[in-house]
Image (cartoon, rainbow, N blue to C red; front, side, top):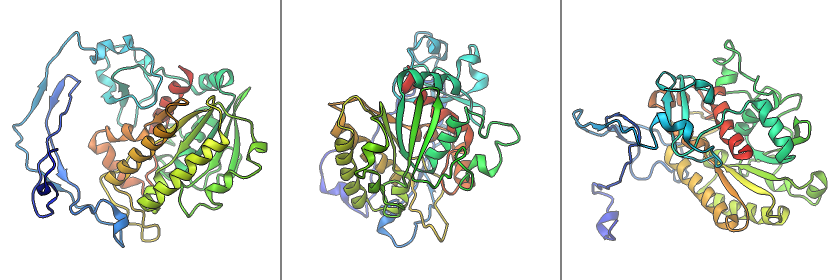
Length: 374
């Protein structure tokens, strides 16, 4: 964008150009709406959560983009099984209806509740079973440290139960599986405990540290994890997973979040000095299509606010550690962002805490399994 004072005029209409690359064979009809004006997406600048009242953009219904068949396209579904296995959990992809798959469906991960599967463009997801993941970690990752919130808890319920949690047809549409599992134990453990060891294989373990982001409402404070006894509690892990942003977006200010991230990066340098400990950063869950109306929590969720916090945390980790050790971005936000609008809207209307439903948790976990095992 050319620098010009008029670009920042508040009472003017601004038009921006952007390139869109359409990789799939289909007919595309552009749609859009204005989410917020006057930066009201950033709730921390306002006393109350700002309502979302989207304004539809006027786009001609005759405007369509046709992407024709091209047998030599590397993005064609017929070429999917020829792609290399995925080794990073942030590969760009799309959701494809299970009925449109032109090859043996046993090569695919599980589908979501709209009978769609997630297929990356440039790599192939191996459909690991939870038993195969347990075997893999026993060979490659004897110890994993995992810091996270209630979304982490849902991922670990799938892992610790070998996938049986919320897998039965009569369970998947219950409130527990779609959204709120707060009252349920994590295996045999109280999920409110600050640290929970989880055995996932004959020779592998996950140490789960419960954090509500880097917020001030953590009890005990997240910094207490890194006490003088930390090194005595556990051995050095091969991987440390940090699942942040969800609580930070909801309850922190931008300036406080940035300050706490710097403190966390210093603690990682101190307590994980060896480059042999790889780092995985899990993004916050995607949020859209609604605003939090809970008068008690007053969570400051918005799509753009979550996007900003996700971008900041991934860039901060890569800048600090990217030259000395492997840093991966486990992009669970992209998974939900690219779902059909109907699926995103359903999630927003049925789950105020913004948890992923159990079917989507399975798919999120597949990104992690392929990162750790391929």
